[in-house]
Amino acid sequence: MRNLPLPSRDDVDKHLKNSITTYKYKKKILGRDISDIEISEVVKIYNQYDLSKGSASDDLKGGILPKDLREAIYDAYDKTHEKRKLYFIRQALFANVLLCPICGIDPVTELDHHLPRSVFYPLSIYTRNLVPICHLCNNTKLAGFGDQSQGEIAYLHAYFDILPDIIFLNAVVDVQRDALNVNFEINIDALLPDGYSKRLSDQITNLKLNTRYQNEVNLYITSHTVALHLSYLDGNKNSVRKFLKAQAKVEQIAFYRNHWRPTLLSALADHDVFIDGGFCAVLPISQEILDDIRND
Image 1 (cartoon, one colour):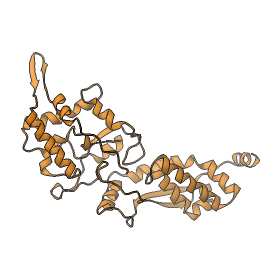
Image 2: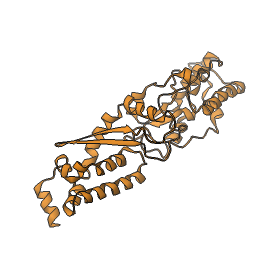
Image 3: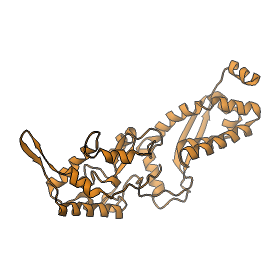
């Protein structure tokens, strides 16, 4: 997981004013308007959300708000879709976020309600409760969060739960004949804030990330087949290790420190069996290509 920049909330009152309105349908007036006093009450809930850094509590459900207002805010989320009034919110949150901040595999395609819309109606269109993620993470996550009576949430908040700039993701590598098996886990000895290690581990487990990572590993490592064989032919396992460590540094810059790709490369660099020819069974190459490499 990685953090995302905290979205602006400068215009949240305008978001409410513009989306909670009456409208005419078949000569009938439907919907409802929102008063300035009601906007102030909703903004107070937003303030509490920020102060608690997105931790669940009963107060964030908006029990003090009229039922029809809570329902109107809930329905307003639909206006964040393309060609609707609040589509600009989605565009702003997606801007400059290429990959899902949870898995780091797929591009962001959906907005996840960090505290679920189905429970926390007033937060339905609050920008800081909306996190851009991929479809698979969103679909698997659903409405999961922790014990709200304790103010806990199961998943770290991409905006508020700031991750330290340290390596905390490990890849455990196992080479069995022609198979490369990799399991990603959180380093329990990493100097993470209290509770982060468990919450990150739960995230990996509950979102079934290791199953997805294994599929990606098999595809991704194939792209390094020639480079690995060339390194081995030009030297020995130390040459392979140097290549993998250098590539890991490149991908840390391209992605981020705890992205699965540089994490994988670093683990492979430290795996003696893999770098000392073990990769040959996992990533076989034809004799014809090897001869071409030698001749070139």
